[in-house]
Image (cartoon, rainbow over all chains, first blue to last red):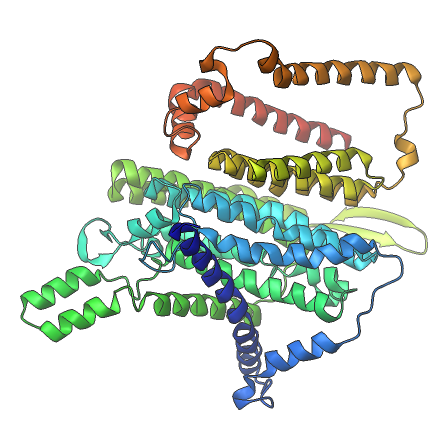
Length: 411
Length: 172
């Protein structure tokens, strides 16, 4: 066994520990924050501020009676929760959470971003197979919705990432983070070029955020488990620890996607978009030794995991915030957003990124203005009148006579 | 080598499962497993891009659509899929048999007939350029050397998509 083997094992163990240790606090934070946002108290009985509530829940689920419906496909029914949890552990393989190449990422392969896209699409197999194996029509519908949702949003997510790839020129996660530590717009030496601060990166980031919420089946995209329509969707028939595994998989993938967003758009492990080495050098040039060392400590390797986890925590808060704010989408709205808005917008963003790369920011501004004007023209002169025309038609159904007719309504 | 044997056994077992399973969902699951194991074999050969494309495209999207169709159409009547015609069965045996012969000739052949060292598997591997199979090399090949062919292929696919939409629209 070479030392490299042991370092590799350590790197993998760190990611797995991050997932396992991270899930209970996330569940606690979701329940507390959601209750505050909804003007409730939330769980506050078990431990200080209810902090031990997830552990109590886990113990409860562990000792709960396992109920399996009669006509399930037993093998698939058992396998599905495991498949749902699998990507949560594997997706972190290319995640960069610090500057030390011995500790992170697990494997710095030249397909880092593709890895994220590929593995994230595997988790939905757990949902589909679980929904199918339960032998329950609500579960099956949940699973079906999940597949359609995944295929629609995976595409937009991939196209949004093209912009990041184009600017970075590499599929490696380490290169993506390194590119974001360059001077902002390649001009300002004291700032970092976080992609979220650049116009094209901001567009890609917004699309990626929407798609990642959809991929993790979170509100407002939680149609696979829409409780007002499908009882609990794919996990209706699951109880005890199998339900707990599904639940844990959902939160773990959420946290992992938060970490991926951090790497791709929020500059990885740097606390603020400031060039710490540059500032530290400036401070020492100004004979402020303590400031210099403080700055290099803040931006250094020791504090990197702290900032990284802080950013992931912030993104999880955004998840919960969105869940508390937005109502669930209707199914046709979900498909419309995915195909008619996110995908074209992501493709346009990609073209605009190429314009920025080739001709600079001025051409980018002009192109963006032209695109925006064209969009408004199309919407204002073609799509909106047509939409109003459709709205003027009323479909009348006479249930007792079993007839239907469409009439035009004068506005 | 041990890894390869284990993976090969699993992948062949999965491939047998695809055609042996009574239930179409089980079949699809076996095919997913087969694709995943194939991807791991590619990874073990350092062909990261090929492996991840396999996972991304086949297991991630195509099999997902297969599953969607199976679930949506609720295909669960295997007796409908049996083929009564003996003539067709003999034709199938003939075709698969000849395919098997071709494959086995490639495996057994090197032991019977000496092959120039550059044409053996090990020879090809050792002669491959350093960046063989990396994202950069594949990207260069697709978008620099054979960009016209690539674009024509993508145009063909686009025509196919538009055509299928047209057919579907006309019927509905």
